[in-house]
Amino acid sequence: MMKAINNKPRERANHYQPKQPNTTVDTLLLDAGNLFLFLSGFLMLYTAYRDRKTLKGYNLPGTLLIVLAIGLALAYYAQQTYWLSFALTLPNYTYWLIVCTSILRRRLSHTTEA
Image (cartoon, rainbow, N blue to C red; front, side, top):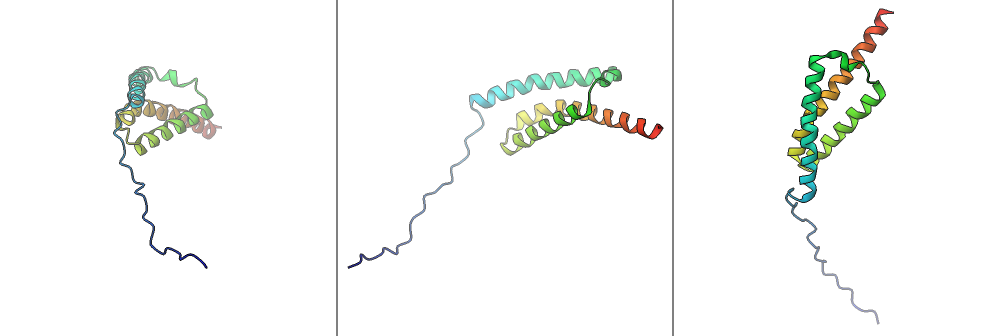
């Protein structure tokens, strides 16, 4: 006849694995690269502060894409708890936000003058 069906509840494997600390070679290389971006961000901010004419050569679509890309990278760093990379990316993000607002302000001032 038919075999009896085992109605015993199945034990589920514990799929939770604790998150590994973010000290691997990958994050060290990421942090090293972001350190260079951190330094370059301050140099770019200093240049833009000293001479605002340096902000004239950028185009809006490219600047918006850079702001979006860095913003998504910041969201990823926060999601993965890469707080050092997050902090090191902020000066670069600030610079590109300044460039974006400068372009938008210039475009809006030209449209209101006409």
